[in-house]
Image (cartoon, rainbow, N blue to C red):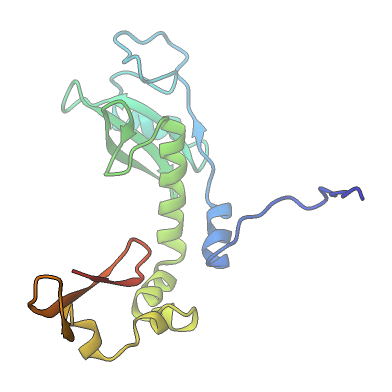
Length: 197
């Protein structure tokens, strides 16, 4: 019997919080502002979005075309350092830009400037539009209605017994009273296991 699959629906990954997912989709998209002039000393890891040493004001004017537009410039205050200038919320935001094989402005690292800007725009948009919603999430944990708390509901005396000693009535092969230790530990999956020492 032949099995026929119809690819009528596009795959959609499960969405944990549909409101936050919707906000991600609404966030401004990156728009690279390219430099039309040849720039001396362009770092090899930056592309045409690098404008050399231009002022904040010049960057602001170039970025005023649309939300999500971005460029990279060399800092005038600290030559040799680079700034990601990004248009969000009708204003230009400037971030110190670093490169160590990957691009970053904070802890999170990215393969490309485009990916960094995409993530930054989504983060800024969600922080702006959903600050109250996110604050409520941290106050009201969702775990109670998805089953996680039931895994840890055991009496406190059971949780804090890492070693149990059992006395056996028989003697071991050496002729001594058999005392064995049972050790309770947890494996990677978080399941409790018991082993005899």
